[in-house]
Image 1 (cartoon, one colour):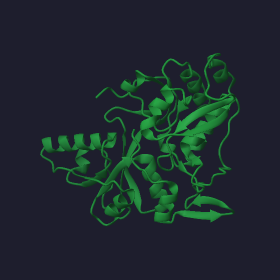
Image 2: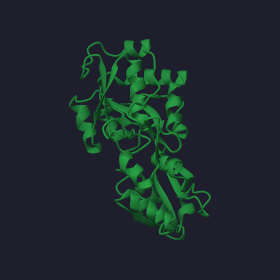
Image 3: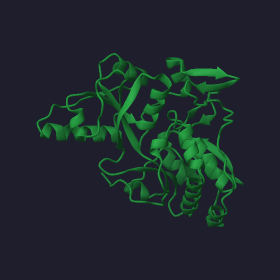
Image 4: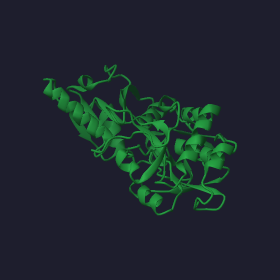
Length: 313
């Protein structure tokens, strides 16, 4: 999935007024901790099986550390804390758990979305945790250890008469905001094609470069729904209380898509990471981190190494 929202948590806070300052820590209006200290971050014990599975000669970027590339895209997946430099969110929390599992310190490298493949291939980072969807094309160059469902969401105003959007006919004739050049756009356009072919009203697809304008369009009645990254829209709904979810779709519709820790092809790090992730799932830390960031609905039951990915387009 390509991140579609570009606002930092500070900009979002200034725009919506969702941050509260309590005892020196910045807490979202519903309890999201955006402080740089992250006192509530879950930790894990070293996983002997995962550590043993790491190749003896694996060229870690830094001694005694696991270097993870993260794109600070949008809360609650990953964003900047209130100090405007520390990266917080689900991805950093999972990265910490994985580093703990391998008995190594966590070293976070901030990346821009277009740069993660080169950063990984060149050895700048050991792995990337940043909402990367498993695809067959990417599997030619990278290995994957899955950790979360790739989920997109339909959201409407809280007072909207729309109750459910689950299939193409549900959006016929609606004005829907989405993100250009993304999986969600591809899905929406295909649904529109099917609707028109069946004699239903076409969808009016709307695009906005500015996320603030996007939400204003929805609240003012210029659009009926937003179709975008479910995690980000859940965060907005929880913090502002002006929207609600009416449906979800896999990011790989009609196939199921999953997000994964990404490593260099053939490096030997993917299997140890998968072992670590499954241990975290079994022990409950994985679920605890998901729930901390309101992402429990995107949990997977078992991590896998290089599962079938989305087909080449």
